[in-house]
Image 1 (cartoon, chains in turn orange, brown):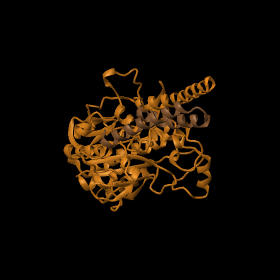
Image 2: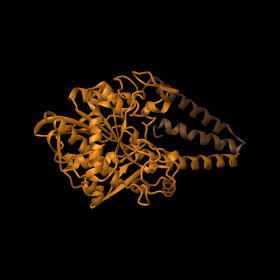
Image 3: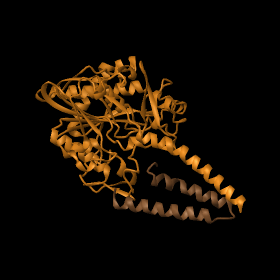
Image 4: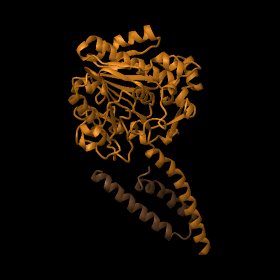
Amino acid sequence: MRRINLIKTSMAVVVLAVMVAGAIPLYKHRHFQIPIVAGPGVTRVAWLSDWCPALKGTMADTQVFFMEGKLPGGKALIMSNTHANEPAGLLMELIFLENAVVERGTLILIPEFNRSASSTTRPGDGYPLYFSVKTSWGAMKLRMGNRDAHPLDQWPDPDVYIHYPDKQLLSFIDIRNTNRTWPGRARGPLMERVTYAAMELMRKEKVDIALDLHGAETMFPVTNCIVAPEKSARIATMVSLYVKAREGFDNHVEPSPVGFRGLSHREIGDYSGTLPFLLEAPIPFLDQPTGPKTEQFILDGKDPLLLKLSKKNKLFVAYTAEGWPMDKRVGQHSSVSLEIINQYSKKNPVRAIQVLNVPRYKDLVANGVGFYLQDPAKAEPSRVYHN
Amino acid sequence: MSLVMWAYYAICVCLIGLLGWNFVREKKSVDEMLLYLIVLVPLVLRVLRIK
């Protein structure tokens, strides 16, 4: 009897120790805060719940940064981390927030659009919980999230997700995917409330253009491109031609399919006056199969399996031993975003938006992302936000 | 949290109780003791809202 009690106690202690050892990193990851330094261009900070009160107090509520120019003009909204495992967009937004100055019009930035998804991970794929960007003041640590919202925040998943309002049948997991729940509803599942709040923001603030920043696999055909519906196609085409001719990188235009519902590039245009654009930069980290999903792989995009596949013409982008580094991906997002704003402003002078002091593709490739990130420890504490 | 979510947590707590009780009552099979503990892990982590 004494022996069995000893075995039981030992087993309970070992299992408890394993459980605690596994739980602590996950708890810390979920509650890790990314410091965001509001640069000289940030004029006010709101919460997404200001446009949908049902989001207030949830893990899905997120900060909305306004950069208002002195001169009147149009409004552009940029969202990143719609999929929180595609971090190039987030880094681009941090660079904009910390450096940009808006002369004319307004820039609205939501760096962590799916805040809940950024607080979870994909352990089955061996994702690292964090990655760090080298800067002159040290390493900036960022949280690596997942594609879909955390099940702790939205549960249970249905057998099939019936999209609102089109009633199209989508995969069950897409009920937690903020690029399938547009245009959303005020009292729907949490992720529908997130997209509804963004739609309300666009409708009430009269946003002219909306950019949704993503990353896509090199083996996926819709990669390295701008996805645009009919109403945005002309501007997207001009941007594609410009970056190819002037900045030396490819970024073709993909039409937004009318029959595939719930995506930002489709629903924003159909349910508001805003012109939507979805930007895809290649992210080899998301490809399958690859080698180990390491922090270094997030940053440099180098993988020997993808290199072999590239030699057999199995990829949809050019891929060399140089990989597809983060600096290049962030640079593409930056140049394409600025050029969309520029092309829109040329066509609509009354609603023009003028953004200054932001690095473009060549600057980011030459200097690296870290060069443009500020040290939160040295910034004015009232200008540091945590998300 | 929705009603379904609350029900889900209530079911988790019930299962934790049942598994814990079975673990305490088990006197012979070491394999089953270990299995009870392993099955408990995800349920405990869910109720604590960690995973």
